[in-house]
Length: 107
Image (tube, rainbow, N blue to C red; front, top):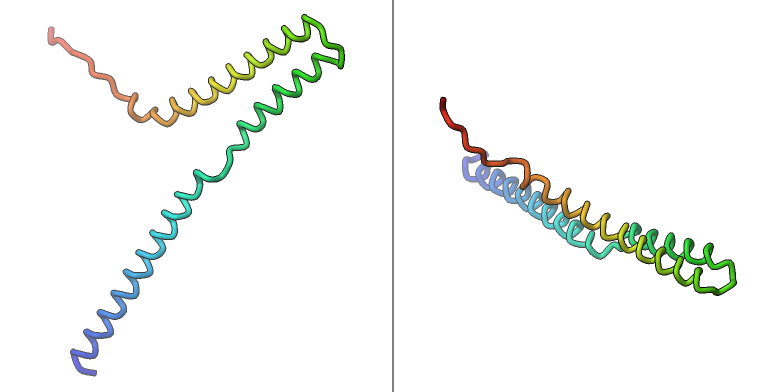
């Protein structure tokens, strides 16, 4: 084999390897991009739990107290949902809050 043939095979192997890696990185980034289209099951669970609480309180007999209980249940469910969203936001930004600047004075 001549040096030209060896170099051509080496260049072909290099391009094939780099192309494979580039393609796989592109494939992985597409999969990560698609995650935002997957529905979140936690939101559905909060709504179902609120509806279950509301229907268990009513017992089929409408009254003013039942309507008041329904409002309380909805407010509590909304507060729990807001708390869960805030907790996600705090965990996402946790890395930015680790360091604090403090002034040290020499004595």
